[in-house]
Image (cartoon, rainbow, N blue to C red; front, side, top):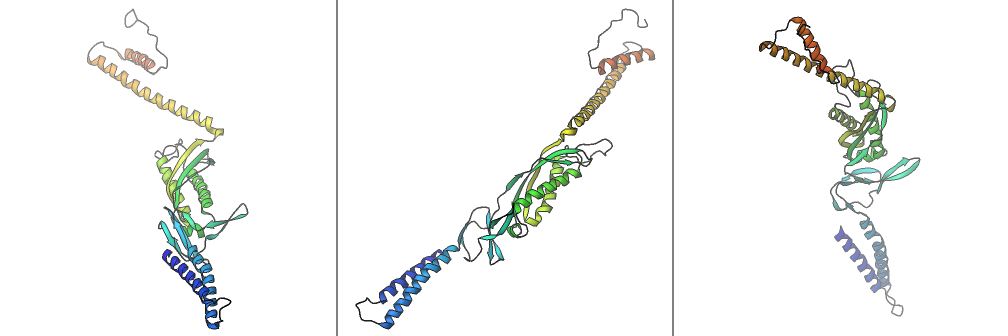
Length: 308
Protein backbone atom coordinates (compact mmCIF):
# COMPACT_ATOMS: atom_id res chain seq x y z
CA UNK A 1 0.00 0.00 0.00
CA UNK A 2 2.96 2.33 0.33
CA UNK A 3 3.71 1.69 -3.33
CA UNK A 4 0.06 2.31 -4.20
CA UNK A 5 0.16 5.55 -2.24
CA UNK A 6 3.24 6.71 -4.19
CA UNK A 7 1.72 5.73 -7.55
CA UNK A 8 -1.61 7.43 -6.82
CA UNK A 9 0.14 10.59 -5.68
CA UNK A 10 2.27 10.60 -8.84
CA UNK A 11 -0.82 10.12 -11.05
CA UNK A 12 -2.61 12.98 -9.32
CA UNK A 13 0.40 15.25 -9.85
CA UNK A 14 0.56 14.13 -13.48
CA UNK A 15 -3.13 14.99 -13.98
CA UNK A 16 -2.61 18.42 -12.49
CA UNK A 17 0.42 19.09 -14.70
CA UNK A 18 -1.35 17.77 -17.80
CA UNK A 19 -4.44 19.85 -17.10
CA UNK A 20 -2.36 22.97 -16.56
CA UNK A 21 -0.52 22.39 -19.86
CA UNK A 22 -3.75 21.89 -21.81
CA UNK A 23 -5.22 25.20 -20.67
CA UNK A 24 -4.00 27.81 -23.21
CA UNK A 25 -2.66 31.18 -22.13
CA UNK A 26 -4.95 34.23 -22.17
CA UNK A 27 -3.41 35.67 -25.35
CA UNK A 28 -3.50 32.32 -27.20
CA UNK A 29 -6.31 31.36 -29.58
CA UNK A 30 -9.21 29.78 -27.73
CA UNK A 31 -9.45 26.00 -28.16
CA UNK A 32 -12.68 25.05 -26.49
CA UNK A 33 -12.23 21.25 -26.44
CA UNK A 34 -8.62 21.32 -25.29
CA UNK A 35 -9.34 23.96 -22.68
CA UNK A 36 -12.30 21.97 -21.29
CA UNK A 37 -10.19 18.81 -21.12
CA UNK A 38 -7.45 20.70 -19.32
CA UNK A 39 -9.89 22.12 -16.79
CA UNK A 40 -11.35 18.66 -16.16
CA UNK A 41 -7.92 17.09 -15.68
CA UNK A 42 -6.86 19.91 -13.39
CA UNK A 43 -9.96 19.68 -11.22
CA UNK A 44 -9.83 15.87 -11.06
CA UNK A 45 -6.13 15.94 -10.19
CA UNK A 46 -6.59 18.51 -7.43
CA UNK A 47 -9.56 16.66 -5.90
CA UNK A 48 -7.81 13.30 -6.17
CA UNK A 49 -4.56 14.46 -4.57
CA UNK A 50 -6.53 16.01 -1.71
CA UNK A 51 -8.72 12.96 -1.02
CA UNK A 52 -7.27 9.65 -2.28
CA UNK A 53 -3.74 9.78 -0.72
CA UNK A 54 -5.27 11.02 2.52
CA UNK A 55 -7.70 8.07 2.66
CA UNK A 56 -4.94 5.58 1.86
CA UNK A 57 -2.67 7.14 4.47
CA UNK A 58 -5.40 6.82 7.15
CA UNK A 59 -5.32 3.04 6.72
CA UNK A 60 -1.75 2.62 7.96
CA UNK A 61 -1.14 1.59 11.57
CA UNK A 62 1.56 -0.14 13.63
CA UNK A 63 1.28 -2.97 16.13
CA UNK A 64 3.84 -3.19 18.92
CA UNK A 65 4.90 -6.53 20.46
CA UNK A 66 2.15 -7.98 22.67
CA UNK A 67 -0.39 -5.55 21.29
CA UNK A 68 -3.52 -6.08 19.19
CA UNK A 69 -5.95 -3.92 17.27
CA UNK A 70 -9.65 -4.62 16.93
CA UNK A 71 -11.12 -3.87 13.48
CA UNK A 72 -14.63 -2.36 13.53
CA UNK A 73 -16.40 -1.23 10.35
CA UNK A 74 -19.46 0.92 11.03
CA UNK A 75 -20.17 -0.92 14.28
CA UNK A 76 -19.52 -4.40 12.87
CA UNK A 77 -16.64 -6.40 14.36
CA UNK A 78 -14.37 -7.65 11.56
CA UNK A 79 -11.50 -9.27 13.47
CA UNK A 80 -8.31 -8.59 15.39
CA UNK A 81 -4.76 -7.95 14.17
CA UNK A 82 -2.15 -9.50 16.49
CA UNK A 83 0.98 -9.60 14.29
CA UNK A 84 3.46 -6.93 15.24
CA UNK A 85 4.74 -4.56 12.58
CA UNK A 86 3.42 -2.08 10.00
CA UNK A 87 -0.05 -2.80 8.61
CA UNK A 88 -2.72 -1.32 6.38
CA UNK A 89 -6.45 -1.84 6.67
CA UNK A 90 -9.63 -0.24 5.46
CA UNK A 91 -9.35 3.45 6.40
CA UNK A 92 -12.99 3.44 7.45
CA UNK A 93 -12.26 1.07 10.34
CA UNK A 94 -13.09 2.81 13.60
CA UNK A 95 -10.39 4.27 15.83
CA UNK A 96 -12.60 3.93 18.91
CA UNK A 97 -14.63 0.99 20.16
CA UNK A 98 -17.14 3.10 22.06
CA UNK A 99 -17.09 4.79 25.44
CA UNK A 100 -16.93 3.80 29.06
CA UNK A 101 -18.42 5.85 31.86
CA UNK A 102 -16.28 6.60 34.91
CA UNK A 103 -17.79 8.88 37.56
CA UNK A 104 -20.45 9.92 35.06
CA UNK A 105 -17.88 10.98 32.46
CA UNK A 106 -17.64 9.22 29.09
CA UNK A 107 -14.14 8.11 28.08
CA UNK A 108 -13.53 6.72 24.57
CA UNK A 109 -12.01 3.25 24.37
CA UNK A 110 -9.24 2.74 21.83
CA UNK A 111 -9.35 -0.25 19.48
CA UNK A 112 -5.72 -0.98 20.40
CA UNK A 113 -5.54 -3.44 23.29
CA UNK A 114 -2.41 -4.39 25.20
CA UNK A 115 -1.81 -8.14 25.49
CA UNK A 116 1.01 -7.74 28.00
CA UNK A 117 0.82 -9.30 31.45
CA UNK A 118 -0.40 -6.89 34.11
CA UNK A 119 -0.23 -7.00 37.89
CA UNK A 120 -3.00 -5.96 40.23
CA UNK A 121 -2.20 -5.51 43.91
CA UNK A 122 -5.43 -5.82 45.81
CA UNK A 123 -6.26 -3.74 48.84
CA UNK A 124 -6.44 -5.18 52.35
CA UNK A 125 -9.93 -6.58 52.87
CA UNK A 126 -11.59 -7.32 56.18
CA UNK A 127 -13.73 -10.48 55.91
CA UNK A 128 -14.89 -13.38 58.08
CA UNK A 129 -13.32 -16.78 57.53
CA UNK A 130 -15.18 -20.10 57.54
CA UNK A 131 -15.37 -20.10 61.35
CA UNK A 132 -16.64 -16.51 61.49
CA UNK A 133 -13.36 -15.00 62.72
CA UNK A 134 -12.64 -11.54 61.27
CA UNK A 135 -9.40 -11.53 59.28
CA UNK A 136 -7.48 -9.16 57.03
CA UNK A 137 -6.47 -10.52 53.63
CA UNK A 138 -5.02 -9.20 50.36
CA UNK A 139 -3.88 -10.71 47.08
CA UNK A 140 -1.88 -9.99 43.94
CA UNK A 141 -2.88 -11.32 40.53
CA UNK A 142 -1.08 -11.43 37.19
CA UNK A 143 -3.53 -11.21 34.28
CA UNK A 144 -3.63 -10.45 30.57
CA UNK A 145 -6.17 -10.05 27.82
CA UNK A 146 -6.64 -13.14 25.67
CA UNK A 147 -9.87 -12.43 23.76
CA UNK A 148 -9.88 -8.80 22.60
CA UNK A 149 -13.47 -8.89 21.33
CA UNK A 150 -14.82 -10.00 24.71
CA UNK A 151 -12.64 -7.47 26.54
CA UNK A 152 -14.02 -4.55 24.50
CA UNK A 153 -17.61 -5.59 23.78
CA UNK A 154 -18.80 -7.93 26.58
CA UNK A 155 -17.90 -5.66 29.51
CA UNK A 156 -17.94 -1.90 29.90
CA UNK A 157 -14.35 -1.48 31.16
CA UNK A 158 -12.28 -4.64 31.48
CA UNK A 159 -9.75 -3.01 33.83
CA UNK A 160 -12.42 -2.08 36.36
CA UNK A 161 -14.07 -5.45 35.81
CA UNK A 162 -10.85 -7.29 36.72
CA UNK A 163 -10.38 -5.21 39.87
CA UNK A 164 -13.95 -5.70 41.05
CA UNK A 165 -14.05 -9.43 40.35
CA UNK A 166 -10.66 -9.89 42.02
CA UNK A 167 -12.04 -8.46 45.25
CA UNK A 168 -15.20 -10.56 45.00
CA UNK A 169 -13.28 -13.77 44.34
CA UNK A 170 -10.91 -13.12 47.25
CA UNK A 171 -13.83 -12.56 49.63
CA UNK A 172 -15.44 -15.82 48.49
CA UNK A 173 -12.23 -17.83 48.94
CA UNK A 174 -11.59 -16.28 52.36
CA UNK A 175 -15.03 -17.35 53.58
CA UNK A 176 -14.55 -20.88 52.22
CA UNK A 177 -11.56 -21.78 54.42
CA UNK A 178 -10.70 -21.29 58.08
CA UNK A 179 -7.75 -19.11 59.01
CA UNK A 180 -6.15 -21.91 61.07
CA UNK A 181 -6.92 -25.41 62.31
CA UNK A 182 -9.61 -25.07 64.96
CA UNK A 183 -10.28 -27.52 67.84
CA UNK A 184 -12.77 -30.17 66.83
CA UNK A 185 -12.06 -29.84 63.12
CA UNK A 186 -10.81 -32.92 61.23
CA UNK A 187 -7.07 -33.14 60.66
CA UNK A 188 -5.81 -32.34 57.19
CA UNK A 189 -8.42 -29.67 56.49
CA UNK A 190 -7.17 -26.90 54.18
CA UNK A 191 -6.60 -23.61 56.02
CA UNK A 192 -5.58 -20.16 54.84
CA UNK A 193 -2.41 -20.06 56.94
CA UNK A 194 -1.10 -23.58 56.46
CA UNK A 195 -2.06 -24.33 52.85
CA UNK A 196 -0.96 -21.30 50.86
CA UNK A 197 -0.46 -23.21 47.62
CA UNK A 198 -3.89 -24.86 47.71
CA UNK A 199 -5.61 -21.57 48.59
CA UNK A 200 -3.76 -19.71 45.82
CA UNK A 201 -4.79 -22.37 43.30
CA UNK A 202 -8.41 -22.11 44.44
CA UNK A 203 -8.24 -18.32 44.07
CA UNK A 204 -6.79 -18.66 40.58
CA UNK A 205 -9.58 -21.03 39.51
CA UNK A 206 -12.21 -18.73 40.99
CA UNK A 207 -10.81 -15.75 39.09
CA UNK A 208 -10.54 -17.71 35.85
CA UNK A 209 -14.25 -18.51 35.96
CA UNK A 210 -15.27 -14.95 36.82
CA UNK A 211 -13.01 -13.23 34.26
CA UNK A 212 -13.67 -15.58 31.34
CA UNK A 213 -16.55 -13.34 30.27
CA UNK A 214 -14.13 -10.43 29.82
CA UNK A 215 -11.67 -12.46 27.73
CA UNK A 216 -9.05 -12.28 30.50
CA UNK A 217 -6.87 -15.16 31.68
CA UNK A 218 -5.03 -15.43 35.00
CA UNK A 219 -1.34 -16.31 34.95
CA UNK A 220 -0.86 -16.30 38.72
CA UNK A 221 -2.70 -15.41 41.93
CA UNK A 222 -1.16 -15.24 45.40
CA UNK A 223 -2.00 -14.03 48.87
CA UNK A 224 0.16 -11.10 49.94
CA UNK A 225 -1.32 -10.42 53.38
CA UNK A 226 -3.06 -12.62 55.93
CA UNK A 227 -3.68 -11.76 59.57
CA UNK A 228 -6.37 -11.74 62.21
CA UNK A 229 -8.29 -8.51 62.58
CA UNK A 230 -6.89 -6.23 65.33
CA UNK A 231 -9.88 -6.79 67.65
CA UNK A 232 -9.17 -10.53 68.03
CA UNK A 233 -5.47 -10.66 67.22
CA UNK A 234 -4.36 -10.68 70.89
CA UNK A 235 -6.80 -13.42 71.88
CA UNK A 236 -5.77 -15.60 68.96
CA UNK A 237 -2.11 -15.01 69.76
CA UNK A 238 -2.63 -16.24 73.32
CA UNK A 239 -4.42 -19.33 71.99
CA UNK A 240 -1.54 -20.07 69.64
CA UNK A 241 0.95 -19.57 72.47
CA UNK A 242 -1.03 -21.96 74.68
CA UNK A 243 -1.09 -24.58 71.95
CA UNK A 244 2.66 -24.20 71.52
CA UNK A 245 3.26 -24.59 75.27
CA UNK A 246 1.08 -27.72 75.40
CA UNK A 247 2.87 -29.24 72.42
CA UNK A 248 6.26 -28.50 74.02
CA UNK A 249 5.17 -30.00 77.35
CA UNK A 250 3.99 -33.17 75.63
CA UNK A 251 7.37 -33.49 73.96
CA UNK A 252 9.21 -32.94 77.25
CA UNK A 253 7.11 -35.52 79.10
CA UNK A 254 7.63 -38.09 76.35
CA UNK A 255 11.37 -37.53 76.51
CA UNK A 256 11.44 -37.65 80.33
CA UNK A 257 9.50 -40.94 80.45
CA UNK A 258 11.91 -42.45 77.97
CA UNK A 259 14.94 -41.33 79.96
CA UNK A 260 13.52 -42.65 83.24
CA UNK A 261 12.71 -45.99 81.65
CA UNK A 262 16.21 -46.18 80.22
CA UNK A 263 17.76 -45.36 83.63
CA UNK A 264 15.77 -48.03 85.46
CA UNK A 265 16.50 -50.58 82.73
CA UNK A 266 20.24 -49.89 82.79
CA UNK A 267 20.42 -50.01 86.59
CA UNK A 268 18.59 -53.32 86.68
CA UNK A 269 20.52 -54.87 83.77
CA UNK A 270 23.95 -53.97 85.15
CA UNK A 271 22.95 -54.79 88.74
CA UNK A 272 24.22 -51.48 90.00
CA UNK A 273 21.64 -51.38 92.77
CA UNK A 274 18.55 -53.37 93.68
CA UNK A 275 15.51 -51.16 94.23
CA UNK A 276 12.15 -52.20 95.51
CA UNK A 277 8.95 -50.73 94.09
CA UNK A 278 8.80 -47.94 96.67
CA UNK A 279 12.36 -46.75 95.90
CA UNK A 280 11.74 -47.03 92.20
CA UNK A 281 8.67 -44.80 92.58
CA UNK A 282 10.72 -42.26 94.53
CA UNK A 283 13.47 -42.32 91.91
CA UNK A 284 10.95 -41.91 89.10
CA UNK A 285 9.35 -38.97 90.91
CA UNK A 286 12.70 -37.25 91.46
CA UNK A 287 13.81 -37.79 87.86
CA UNK A 288 10.53 -36.50 86.45
CA UNK A 289 10.76 -33.37 88.59
CA UNK A 290 14.32 -32.74 87.43
CA UNK A 291 13.64 -33.43 83.76
CA UNK A 292 10.30 -31.64 83.46
CA UNK A 293 10.94 -28.69 85.74
CA UNK A 294 11.46 -25.23 84.24
CA UNK A 295 14.07 -24.19 86.81
CA UNK A 296 17.31 -25.92 87.71
CA UNK A 297 16.98 -28.60 90.41
CA UNK A 298 18.87 -28.15 93.72
CA UNK A 299 20.68 -31.43 94.51
CA UNK A 300 20.42 -32.85 98.06
CA UNK A 301 23.02 -35.37 99.22
CA UNK A 302 21.82 -38.33 101.31
CA UNK A 303 24.58 -39.21 103.78
CA UNK A 304 22.60 -41.93 105.50
CA UNK A 305 21.41 -45.26 104.26
CA UNK A 306 19.05 -45.69 101.36
CA UNK A 307 16.12 -46.20 103.75
CA UNK A 308 16.78 -43.25 106.06
